[in-house]
Structure formats: C-alpha cells, structure tokens
Image (cartoon, rainbow, N blue to C red; front, side, top):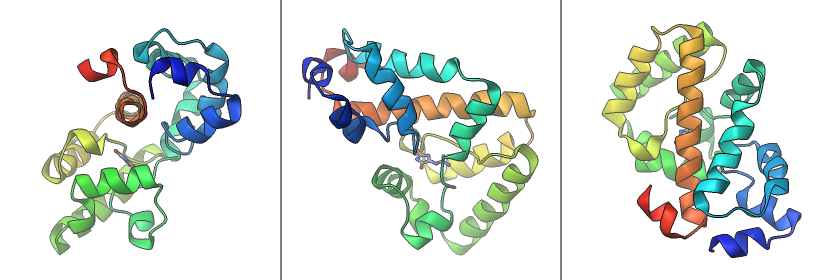
Length: 174
Ligand SMILES: NC(=O)NC1NC(=O)NC1=O
C-alpha cells in the first residue's frame, strides 16, 4: 500500500498490519498511529524511531527482550512470528550444521548471561557466517554499547518489515 492508504487506516487495521514491525511490540505501533498523517515512508519510520529513542534504557532493553534468539527454541519449536521465521530462514539459521548450531547456542547463552537481553541483529542484512562472527565479537562489548547496538539492529529490522508493507519512492531508496 502507499502512504495515503496507510494514513487512511483506522487504528485497528493499522495495528493489525504494522503491529509486528518491531517484534512483539504492538504498543509502539499503537502509539505511533496518533502521529498520522505521515508525509512519506521516511516519516513513518522516523516516528517509530523517535518513540523508541524516547524510552528509558529499561524500555529499550524490554524491546530487545521481545526478540527471539537466532536459531533458538522458537525456531526449533515452530513458534516464531512469520516475519522472524522468514528472516531467520533467509540467513540460514534453520540450516546450521552441528558445529554452527552448538556455537550459536553457546554464544547466545553467554551473551544473555552477560547483558540480560538477547543478541539482536538484522538477519536480512547479513548471513550466518557474519552472524556468528558478530555474536562472538559483540559478547565482549560494554552493556551500554550493546544496548545501543541492539536497538540500531531493531530499527534495521523495522525498516525491512516496513518496506515489505509500504510502497513509495522513499522506501525504494533505502
Ligand atoms: N535475535 C534476533 O536478532 N532476532 C531476529 N533478527 C531478525 O532479523 N529477525 C529476528 O527475529
């Protein structure tokens, strides 16, 4: 749909369609609805970004905690959201060999133990080799650095999900 159609959506439809652009955080979509009309794709994306930036650090960590592990229990149990399932499959997370799978599980646990939130990366913009490398490197960061880094990745995931829903000249350039 184009931005005019987005702006014309009643609240319920807006949340139904855009409720998972930030994983399992429909409250963000619900809040942003009142910022209509959006002049273009970029304005919609910016409204979401500004809402996230306005949250206290605990709120940002809450957003990170709404994300499923990469190649984790939800993937194996078939309980990922559709968006997450497609993203993880695209990055090969459903086809790891046994060494990759055990490294992934070990590093995901190590990361969560250290920071108290899961490792988040935009799977659509990378691949399994890079995901494993980043996971291992980012485990060594400071908590505040990693919180900001994770939120940057949430925004990238959000952009990709929005692009799948909204057509328009601005989205094509991103
Ligand atoms: N943990 C994590 O990064 N999860 C995700 N990344 C992504 O692109 N989709 C996800 O579900």
